Structures are given as C-alpha cells and as structure tokens.
Length: 117
Length: 108
Image (cartoon, rainbow over all chains, first blue to last red; front, side):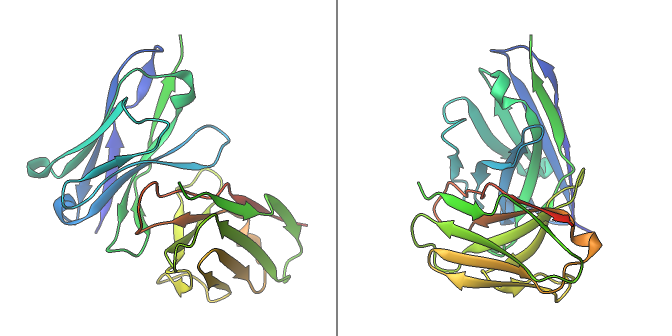
C-alpha cells in the first residue's frame, strides 16, 4: 500500500527555518516525481516544488531562493528545507506523488507550519 | 508562467443537476490537465487526468473534456457527497505545476 507521511511542522518565528520530512512506503521515491503542495488556512492549493526522478528540482517563485527540496533514497524520504520563513508561508504542507504522468495520485495528510512571532 | 483560471469560484445546485466547471490555461498545455476534489478537512483526491481519463474508482457521473487551453469538469447528476472544492492543475509539463483557484460546490 502506498503511504506518504509528513512530519516536521510547527510554530516558527519570521525569519526562522524548518525542515519538513515526507516518508514514503509502498514505492521508491527515486523512481518517481515527488512534490510539495501547500494550502494556507481557508485558501486554495499552491504547488511549491518538485524533485524529478532524474534529480532535477524546480520551485514556485514565491519560495525560490528560500526553500530547498531534497531526498534521501536510503530512507525513502523527501525533504523540504525552509529558510527565511514569512507569515505568508503559514500553511499545511503536503507531499504528493506524481504517478507516472497521471497526476498527483497519492498525497500525505500534511503537516502544519505556522510562522508567527 | 502559465496561469490556470477556474470559473465559477463557487456554485450552488440542486441534487440531480448537471454541474459544469471550467478551467482555462493562459497558454496551450495539450491535455496535461488534472482535476482534484477536496472535501472539507480532507486531502485532495485525483478525479481525472489527461483532461478526460477517469481515475480508478471515481464515479462515472464525473467527466472531463478539453485540450489546449479550455477544459471542463462535468458532474452529470450532482449528489450530496459531491459537496467539495474542485481544482484543476497543469501537470507533466514545465513547472510551475499550477493549480486553478478552485470552485466550491454546494447543494441548494
């Protein structure tokens, strides 16, 4: 069974840093395109970043230069390193698997990041 | 970057009504368009990919159409369990993999 479990969220002050983790089971993240998607309270879905199976990475303009996506294949875990956090980064962060070009079939439950003083 | 514009932003319809949601891309995206359903407090669920291919297990009252820049999600007969927010997304193309703004569907 495919499962994605995020962790690492919490309360952080503006300008602070946080690292989110997404541990996958039932498949290998190295063979798949893995994404981070966030949803601010009461708002819509916002794509944040992708780590393609070939290792290439891309980011939304809103996080470029501040966030870094990475993976540890030995742990089958995806990460999102977040620096210089802003109040507008407050959201539930989901990891999502792009299943062989058929859309984001698998999603984690998400982890809440709150940026506030 | 390609923008994805959904309309309407919300709608209210009666049980059994035919409901149509549109999504427009600012540039052509072939058929790399997915639709998601998100019920309150839940994780988004993939309904349709490739603009018109129904994801396994999704009721047949849901259908998608379109190619290029204009896409449609149709619910042929609205059911109470369809109350949700629906999002389109361009995928399997050059990032950013943008979502539309969402359409909130309610029962009248």
